[in-house]
Length: 110
Ligand SMILES: CC(C)(COP(=O)(O)OP(=O)(O)OC[C@H]1O[C@@H](n2cnc3c(N)ncnc32)[C@H](O)[C@@H]1OP(=O)(O)O)[C@@H](O)C(=O)NCCC(=O)NCCS
Image 1 (spheres, helix red, strand yellow):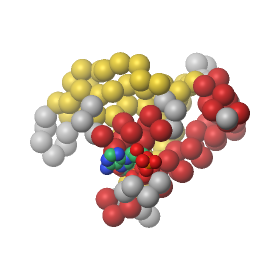
Image 2: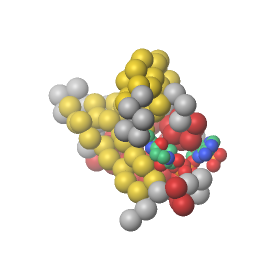
Image 3: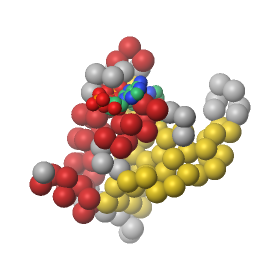
Image 4: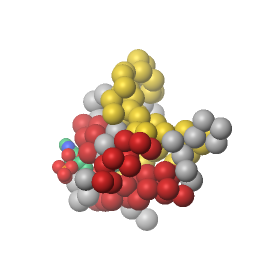
């Protein structure tokens, strides 16, 4: 096992869920998370028939923010002091993103 990914906090009435992931450092920057998250988004929109996926990343997490944007998520604002780092106990701001099924469908046509 080199990492994990989940589509959770599913609200079936609203059709909304949250994407989360991590990858072991030895496996970074090889396209794994783009590939895995793309498959998870396909599953969420096509099989689960969800309408919106939320994701967030600490403002200073360059890799995660870049991965999220590469997947087509739209930046929707900053959630202040939304994370507490386990290692330091310090609070961090988080960038908040969303991807709609209609956005995803358009991306598949390209
Ligand atoms: C964020 C994370 C999952 C990215 O996974 P990954 O498999 O390395 O990402 P990918 O290789 O698919 O990269 C996707 C894009 O992100 C960007 N990127 C990835 N790592 C980067 C880095 N270290 N610095 C700058 N950009 C980076 C690149 O633009 C890349 O696209 P490109 O290769 O076409 O240029 C991984 O770095 C990780 O697990 N980090 C630690 C835990 C974490 O941050 N989890 C997410 C919490 S929100």
